Image 1 (cartoon, rainbow, N blue to C red):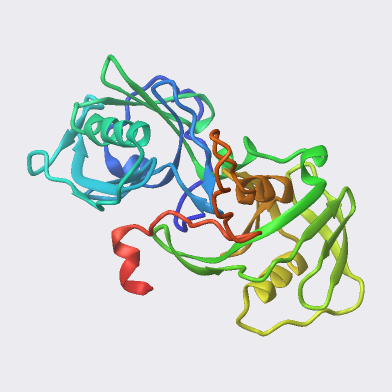
Image 2 (tube, rainbow, N blue to C red):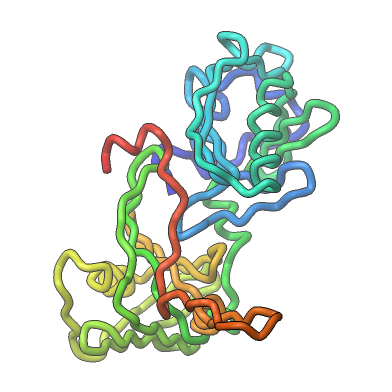
Length: 299
Protein backbone atom coordinates (compact mmCIF):
# COMPACT_ATOMS: atom_id res chain seq x y z
CA UNK A 1 0.00 0.00 0.00
CA UNK A 2 2.81 2.41 0.80
CA UNK A 3 4.58 4.29 -1.94
CA UNK A 4 8.24 4.10 -2.83
CA UNK A 5 8.67 0.33 -2.48
CA UNK A 6 10.17 -1.97 -5.06
CA UNK A 7 8.47 -5.20 -6.04
CA UNK A 8 11.47 -6.46 -7.99
CA UNK A 9 13.45 -9.42 -6.57
CA UNK A 10 17.20 -9.02 -6.01
CA UNK A 11 19.59 -10.07 -8.79
CA UNK A 12 19.78 -13.86 -9.40
CA UNK A 13 22.16 -15.74 -7.15
CA UNK A 14 21.84 -13.41 -4.17
CA UNK A 15 19.69 -15.78 -2.07
CA UNK A 16 21.55 -16.69 1.11
CA UNK A 17 23.90 -13.71 0.95
CA UNK A 18 23.96 -11.03 3.65
CA UNK A 19 22.40 -7.61 3.27
CA UNK A 20 25.09 -5.03 4.02
CA UNK A 21 23.20 -1.73 4.23
CA UNK A 22 19.73 -0.33 4.85
CA UNK A 23 19.83 1.30 1.41
CA UNK A 24 19.95 -2.18 -0.13
CA UNK A 25 16.52 -3.04 1.32
CA UNK A 26 14.94 0.42 1.61
CA UNK A 27 11.17 0.69 1.32
CA UNK A 28 8.10 -1.21 2.44
CA UNK A 29 8.01 -4.83 3.63
CA UNK A 30 5.16 -6.96 4.94
CA UNK A 31 5.72 -9.46 7.73
CA UNK A 32 5.13 -12.92 6.27
CA UNK A 33 6.11 -14.77 9.46
CA UNK A 34 7.42 -13.93 12.92
CA UNK A 35 8.45 -16.91 15.01
CA UNK A 36 5.56 -19.32 14.31
CA UNK A 37 2.99 -16.58 13.72
CA UNK A 38 1.67 -15.71 10.24
CA UNK A 39 -0.18 -12.38 10.50
CA UNK A 40 -3.07 -11.20 8.39
CA UNK A 41 -1.72 -8.60 5.94
CA UNK A 42 -4.69 -6.23 6.19
CA UNK A 43 -6.92 -5.18 9.07
CA UNK A 44 -9.77 -2.88 8.15
CA UNK A 45 -8.15 -2.56 4.73
CA UNK A 46 -4.96 -1.19 6.31
CA UNK A 47 -1.54 -2.86 6.35
CA UNK A 48 -1.28 -4.36 9.81
CA UNK A 49 2.06 -6.21 10.03
CA UNK A 50 4.97 -4.47 8.34
CA UNK A 51 8.52 -3.15 8.54
CA UNK A 52 9.46 0.12 6.85
CA UNK A 53 13.15 0.53 6.09
CA UNK A 54 14.60 4.03 5.73
CA UNK A 55 18.11 5.39 5.38
CA UNK A 56 18.56 5.85 9.12
CA UNK A 57 16.39 3.21 10.71
CA UNK A 58 13.24 1.12 10.89
CA UNK A 59 9.58 1.48 11.82
CA UNK A 60 7.31 -1.49 12.40
CA UNK A 61 3.95 -2.81 13.57
CA UNK A 62 2.48 -6.24 14.17
CA UNK A 63 -0.47 -5.76 16.53
CA UNK A 64 -1.73 -2.63 18.33
CA UNK A 65 1.23 -0.24 18.49
CA UNK A 66 3.66 1.34 16.08
CA UNK A 67 7.34 1.56 16.98
CA UNK A 68 10.72 2.27 15.43
CA UNK A 69 14.37 2.87 16.09
CA UNK A 70 17.50 4.26 14.42
CA UNK A 71 19.69 1.44 13.12
CA UNK A 72 22.33 0.38 10.61
CA UNK A 73 23.54 -2.87 9.04
CA UNK A 74 27.27 -3.64 9.08
CA UNK A 75 29.32 -5.33 6.36
CA UNK A 76 28.68 -8.78 7.84
CA UNK A 77 24.90 -8.37 7.57
CA UNK A 78 24.20 -7.70 11.27
CA UNK A 79 21.53 -5.17 12.25
CA UNK A 80 22.62 -2.82 15.05
CA UNK A 81 20.64 -0.40 17.18
CA UNK A 82 21.92 3.17 17.05
CA UNK A 83 21.56 5.41 20.12
CA UNK A 84 21.43 2.42 22.46
CA UNK A 85 17.95 0.89 22.65
CA UNK A 86 16.06 4.12 22.01
CA UNK A 87 12.62 3.42 20.55
CA UNK A 88 9.62 5.60 19.86
CA UNK A 89 6.26 3.89 20.24
CA UNK A 90 2.56 4.51 20.53
CA UNK A 91 0.94 3.37 23.78
CA UNK A 92 -2.31 1.62 22.89
CA UNK A 93 -3.59 -1.05 25.26
CA UNK A 94 -3.36 -4.52 23.75
CA UNK A 95 -4.74 -7.95 24.61
CA UNK A 96 -2.20 -10.02 26.57
CA UNK A 97 -1.22 -12.33 23.70
CA UNK A 98 -0.91 -9.45 21.25
CA UNK A 99 1.00 -7.42 23.82
CA UNK A 100 3.55 -10.21 24.25
CA UNK A 101 3.85 -10.66 20.49
CA UNK A 102 4.49 -7.01 19.71
CA UNK A 103 6.88 -6.75 22.67
CA UNK A 104 8.80 -9.70 21.25
CA UNK A 105 8.97 -8.03 17.83
CA UNK A 106 10.10 -4.68 19.26
CA UNK A 107 12.81 -6.40 21.30
CA UNK A 108 13.87 -8.55 18.34
CA UNK A 109 15.28 -5.53 16.51
CA UNK A 110 17.61 -4.89 19.44
CA UNK A 111 18.97 -8.46 19.48
CA UNK A 112 21.50 -7.90 16.63
CA UNK A 113 19.78 -10.14 14.08
CA UNK A 114 21.52 -11.02 10.83
CA UNK A 115 19.80 -9.98 7.59
CA UNK A 116 19.99 -12.21 4.52
CA UNK A 117 18.31 -12.49 1.15
CA UNK A 118 16.02 -15.44 0.49
CA UNK A 119 14.62 -16.79 -2.76
CA UNK A 120 12.02 -14.71 -4.61
CA UNK A 121 13.29 -11.46 -3.12
CA UNK A 122 12.25 -12.20 0.46
CA UNK A 123 14.29 -11.26 3.53
CA UNK A 124 15.23 -13.33 6.55
CA UNK A 125 16.22 -11.73 9.85
CA UNK A 126 17.45 -14.12 12.54
CA UNK A 127 19.12 -13.86 15.94
CA UNK A 128 19.71 -17.62 16.15
CA UNK A 129 16.52 -18.20 18.17
CA UNK A 130 13.85 -16.23 16.35
CA UNK A 131 13.23 -15.62 12.66
CA UNK A 132 11.42 -12.79 10.93
CA UNK A 133 10.48 -13.31 7.26
CA UNK A 134 9.62 -10.25 5.15
CA UNK A 135 8.07 -9.90 1.69
CA UNK A 136 7.37 -6.90 -0.49
CA UNK A 137 3.69 -5.85 -0.30
CA UNK A 138 3.00 -6.83 -3.92
CA UNK A 139 4.22 -10.38 -3.24
CA UNK A 140 2.33 -10.62 0.02
CA UNK A 141 -0.90 -9.47 -1.60
CA UNK A 142 -0.67 -12.31 -4.11
CA UNK A 143 -0.49 -14.72 -1.17
CA UNK A 144 -3.87 -13.39 0.02
CA UNK A 145 -5.92 -13.70 -3.16
CA UNK A 146 -9.61 -14.46 -2.68
CA UNK A 147 -10.93 -17.41 -4.73
CA UNK A 148 -14.33 -16.91 -6.39
CA UNK A 149 -16.11 -19.21 -3.91
CA UNK A 150 -14.99 -16.95 -1.02
CA UNK A 151 -15.84 -13.78 -2.90
CA UNK A 152 -19.51 -14.63 -3.44
CA UNK A 153 -21.79 -13.78 -0.53
CA UNK A 154 -23.53 -11.08 1.47
CA UNK A 155 -21.19 -8.46 2.94
CA UNK A 156 -21.55 -5.46 5.24
CA UNK A 157 -19.27 -2.48 4.43
CA UNK A 158 -17.40 -1.33 7.54
CA UNK A 159 -14.91 1.46 6.78
CA UNK A 160 -14.09 3.66 3.79
CA UNK A 161 -10.44 4.69 4.06
CA UNK A 162 -7.98 6.85 2.17
CA UNK A 163 -4.37 5.71 2.44
CA UNK A 164 -1.54 8.19 2.85
CA UNK A 165 2.20 7.87 2.36
CA UNK A 166 4.06 6.36 5.29
CA UNK A 167 1.22 4.04 6.37
CA UNK A 168 -1.04 6.91 7.40
CA UNK A 169 -4.76 6.87 6.68
CA UNK A 170 -8.04 8.68 7.25
CA UNK A 171 -11.62 7.57 6.82
CA UNK A 172 -15.03 6.95 8.32
CA UNK A 173 -17.42 4.10 9.00
CA UNK A 174 -20.69 3.09 7.35
CA UNK A 175 -23.26 4.00 9.99
CA UNK A 176 -26.35 3.22 7.92
CA UNK A 177 -27.12 -0.51 7.48
CA UNK A 178 -26.47 -1.55 3.88
CA UNK A 179 -25.44 -4.70 2.08
CA UNK A 180 -23.02 -5.61 -0.67
CA UNK A 181 -24.15 -8.77 -2.45
CA UNK A 182 -21.51 -10.40 -4.65
CA UNK A 183 -21.94 -13.27 -7.12
CA UNK A 184 -19.16 -14.65 -9.35
CA UNK A 185 -19.92 -11.96 -11.95
CA UNK A 186 -21.90 -9.18 -10.26
CA UNK A 187 -21.95 -6.82 -7.29
CA UNK A 188 -25.02 -5.13 -5.88
CA UNK A 189 -25.13 -2.44 -3.19
CA UNK A 190 -28.32 -1.61 -1.32
CA UNK A 191 -27.19 1.90 -0.37
CA UNK A 192 -27.50 5.03 -2.54
CA UNK A 193 -30.89 3.90 -3.79
CA UNK A 194 -29.43 0.64 -5.07
CA UNK A 195 -26.52 -0.01 -7.41
CA UNK A 196 -25.55 -3.01 -9.54
CA UNK A 197 -22.35 -3.80 -11.42
CA UNK A 198 -21.14 -6.68 -13.56
CA UNK A 199 -17.45 -7.64 -13.72
CA UNK A 200 -14.93 -10.27 -14.77
CA UNK A 201 -12.88 -11.66 -11.88
CA UNK A 202 -9.23 -12.15 -12.85
CA UNK A 203 -6.62 -14.63 -11.64
CA UNK A 204 -4.70 -11.87 -9.86
CA UNK A 205 -7.75 -10.93 -7.77
CA UNK A 206 -9.20 -7.95 -9.61
CA UNK A 207 -12.76 -7.06 -10.60
CA UNK A 208 -12.07 -6.14 -14.22
CA UNK A 209 -14.25 -4.81 -17.04
CA UNK A 210 -16.70 -3.38 -14.50
CA UNK A 211 -19.96 -2.15 -16.04
CA UNK A 212 -22.55 -0.26 -13.99
CA UNK A 213 -26.19 -1.06 -14.62
CA UNK A 214 -27.73 2.42 -14.38
CA UNK A 215 -26.14 5.14 -12.27
CA UNK A 216 -26.45 5.27 -8.47
CA UNK A 217 -25.60 8.55 -6.75
CA UNK A 218 -24.56 9.36 -3.19
CA UNK A 219 -23.30 12.39 -1.32
CA UNK A 220 -19.85 13.13 -2.73
CA UNK A 221 -18.06 12.83 0.62
CA UNK A 222 -19.95 9.83 2.00
CA UNK A 223 -18.44 6.38 2.63
CA UNK A 224 -21.00 4.97 0.19
CA UNK A 225 -19.71 7.30 -2.55
CA UNK A 226 -16.19 5.99 -1.85
CA UNK A 227 -17.43 2.41 -2.20
CA UNK A 228 -19.03 3.15 -5.58
CA UNK A 229 -15.90 4.93 -6.79
CA UNK A 230 -13.74 1.95 -5.83
CA UNK A 231 -16.01 -0.54 -7.62
CA UNK A 232 -16.13 1.62 -10.76
CA UNK A 233 -12.30 1.66 -10.83
CA UNK A 234 -11.87 -2.14 -11.27
CA UNK A 235 -10.73 -2.84 -7.69
CA UNK A 236 -8.26 -5.34 -6.33
CA UNK A 237 -9.78 -7.85 -3.90
CA UNK A 238 -7.85 -9.20 -0.94
CA UNK A 239 -8.48 -11.07 2.28
CA UNK A 240 -8.87 -8.84 5.30
CA UNK A 241 -8.77 -9.82 8.97
CA UNK A 242 -12.56 -9.46 9.09
CA UNK A 243 -13.46 -10.49 5.53
CA UNK A 244 -12.59 -8.68 2.28
CA UNK A 245 -10.86 -5.46 1.24
CA UNK A 246 -11.62 -3.72 -2.08
CA UNK A 247 -8.84 -1.35 -3.14
CA UNK A 248 -8.51 1.12 -6.00
CA UNK A 249 -5.54 3.48 -5.91
CA UNK A 250 -5.34 5.02 -2.44
CA UNK A 251 -8.94 4.17 -1.52
CA UNK A 252 -10.07 1.02 0.28
CA UNK A 253 -13.31 -0.35 1.73
CA UNK A 254 -13.36 -3.39 3.96
CA UNK A 255 -16.34 -5.75 4.04
CA UNK A 256 -17.38 -8.18 6.76
CA UNK A 257 -19.74 -11.10 6.17
CA UNK A 258 -23.35 -10.40 7.11
CA UNK A 259 -23.48 -13.64 9.10
CA UNK A 260 -20.49 -12.60 11.22
CA UNK A 261 -21.87 -9.12 11.86
CA UNK A 262 -25.21 -10.55 12.97
CA UNK A 263 -23.50 -13.15 15.14
CA UNK A 264 -21.43 -10.45 16.82
CA UNK A 265 -24.50 -8.28 17.36
CA UNK A 266 -26.78 -11.02 18.71
CA UNK A 267 -28.00 -10.81 22.33
CA UNK A 268 -26.20 -13.06 24.80
CA UNK A 269 -28.28 -14.96 27.36
CA UNK A 270 -26.49 -15.36 30.73
CA UNK A 271 -26.12 -18.98 31.92
CA UNK A 272 -28.30 -18.17 34.96
CA UNK A 273 -31.27 -17.40 32.73
CA UNK A 274 -31.35 -13.78 33.85
CA UNK A 275 -32.08 -10.78 31.61
CA UNK A 276 -30.41 -10.72 28.22
CA UNK A 277 -27.39 -8.49 27.72
CA UNK A 278 -28.07 -5.49 25.52
CA UNK A 279 -27.15 -6.23 21.90
CA UNK A 280 -24.75 -4.07 19.97
CA UNK A 281 -26.38 -1.99 17.21
CA UNK A 282 -26.94 -4.19 14.13
CA UNK A 283 -24.41 -3.90 11.34
CA UNK A 284 -22.16 -1.70 13.46
CA UNK A 285 -18.80 -0.78 11.93
CA UNK A 286 -15.61 -2.13 13.40
CA UNK A 287 -12.82 0.10 14.69
CA UNK A 288 -9.55 0.19 12.72
CA UNK A 289 -6.11 0.20 14.38
CA UNK A 290 -4.56 3.59 15.21
CA UNK A 291 -2.45 5.40 12.61
CA UNK A 292 1.33 5.51 13.07
CA UNK A 293 2.68 8.50 15.00
CA UNK A 294 3.82 10.39 11.88
CA UNK A 295 0.35 10.16 10.33
CA UNK A 296 -1.59 11.49 13.29
CA UNK A 297 -0.68 15.08 12.42
CA UNK A 298 -2.48 14.67 9.09
CA UNK A 299 -5.81 13.69 10.59
